[in-house]
Amino acid sequence: MDNRKRRQDVRCLQCQRRDGRNRFARAFLTRCVDDTGASKLQVRGCSRCRADGQAGERQPRDENGRWTAGEVVSVSGGELGEFAETKELRKATMQYARDNFVGKSYVNESSGHELKVTCQGVKHAASKANQAELSIMTNLDDLLRYAKYECSYPDRKGRPDIIAAHKYRAVAKVGNESLNVGVIVREFPDGHKHYNYFILKDE
Image 1 (tube, helix red, strand yellow):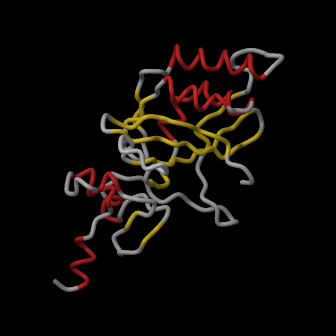
Image 2 (spheres, helix red, strand yellow; image 1 turned 90 degrees about the vertical axis):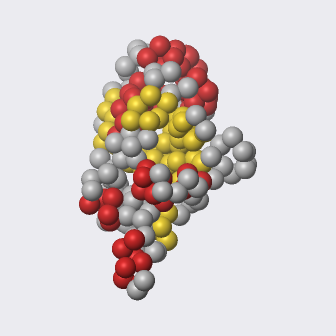
């Protein structure tokens, strides 16, 4: 087989996994391999699966070379009312998430993964969240649906029950401010579960 044919047959681990061609693809590490054989941090899938419309395209970069995404969440910051202390807002936010999101799953448009909201994920995300981050949780469903997939990596503590962690990115508008938000989803044998989200600093 010549090199050209070999390159054409190479498929990224994302589409190998989707097609069931590589049962080990679910454990792929920080860098995905695109159809040119090059190692990329931000690959959305090889050109073949992008052409098939089965994977999101690479996100555009801004003038500083940073990855960008369209606003997927817009909140005023006062959806749950006014609170004198952040701890009271945190309590109300967690209760709202339990009532509206916990136990439900949302298909992410970028990766095609079904992302489940759990009590553990809500608790972890809210535990150290500031007011803006807590406000975003009122639209957690849209955040999980429309955040853009970025990359995957192994669990940093090597826990055997966690197959991989998946990172997503979105832009949330809180009041009049647009904020870059990172989303972390952990993959377990029984599915993908939301673990955390946070405002990305210095971006």
